Length: 190
Image (cartoon, rainbow, N blue to C red; front, side):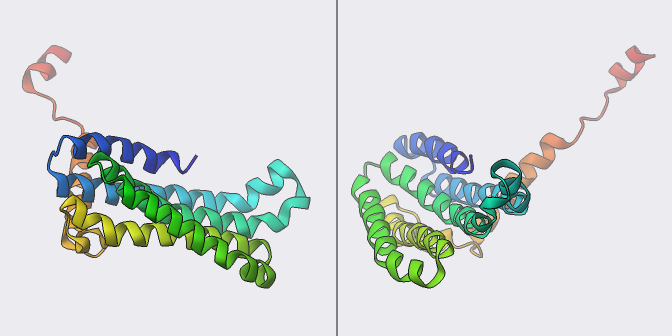
């Protein structure tokens, strides 16, 4: 379920970038939203996994709890890569997406044997995380110049990233506030 979150952001971003609507703001906003929302969903999943795995699959699957938690943590990295790939596809820069995924597969495959021998199931999960980190790193390095977005804007401590989240928070806070009752509606209620 967690991969659905960045996919939704990537699809919206694809159309915005394809129409060239405020490209930098759109990319940074979708990227920041995807990372934050996916991280929140991953945190909830990581907390629930120790109870859900034995409940659903039985106590015999207790060894899968830690690898599942590691894998879910890797989805946050995958979210960033997926959104940047949506932006790249929207601007017809598909090659960089293919490069990122091929690099991710090669890195994860190269690490799989030694990490599995050392860490077992957790090693395989760490290979997934390493693959997602490779894809995100590749996209964060190669895609921004192709999209006309500053690379530093993708860093969580950058001003653009922070301002994007602040703008979203202000928007959500405005939606959550109840509108003040107008004098006319108060008189009608009496």
